[in-house]
Amino acid sequence: NAGVTQTPKFQVLKTGQSMTLQCAQDMNHNSMYWYRQDPGMGLRLIYYSASEGTTDKGEVPNGYNVSRLNKREFSLRLESAAPSQTSVYFCASSVGQGAHLALHFGNGTRLTVT
Amino acid sequence: QQQVKQSPQSLIVQKGGISIINCAYENTAFDYFPWYQQFPGKGPALLIAIRPDVSEKKEGRFTISFNKSAKQFSLHIMDSQPGDSATYFCAARNTDKLIFGTGTRLQVFP
Image (cartoon, rainbow over all chains, first blue to last red; front, side, top):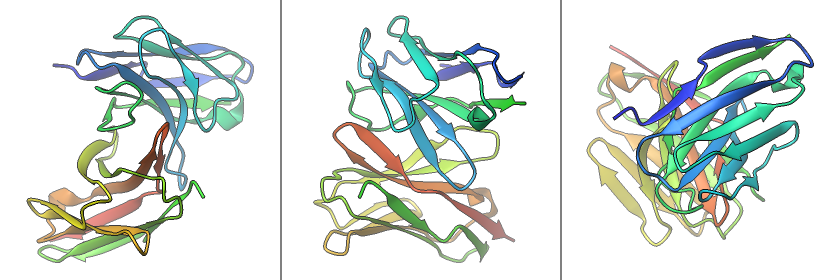
């Protein structure tokens, strides 16, 4: 099993450009999450989806949009990238609906915005 | 009140020693306290977790100690090994979010 797969692994954007980070899980999990990780700040929740067809804001949703395409896939879109969005982005999934328990993380997308 | 404060920021331990990482919280609504381990270039992985109705949970060399009255919990790594060198995150959950600490970078030297 691949678990949680994120693409791309690395990306460099110019300020104002847009991009979509892709995430797919093959564990039949109900919930999916997007976190960002910044030095000295731990992981902060951007958006999550408790089940197919639902999405909710986390701690730091501004500047991002998400789509729960189906049970397997949850994408994160930056419409107009800013240098403050330079970060490592992690997608995660868990069995329960919106339970935030026992998260399985992907290996991240390292994004640099210049 | 939603914060989880983690210390120390970094920790150096000799092989065979005990590594101790501490976390403190304020929100008494938190009901689940996991620890995640992260190796460079990888995503965090769940290591061990505890509920507040239990004071201690042990899995192999890893133990969580939980003090509900003090609103503190800690991770103890017994017989620390070089392969344990990683960043460790504590976290606390309430109904709709999981709040992470800022991480502890552990280095275990042979």
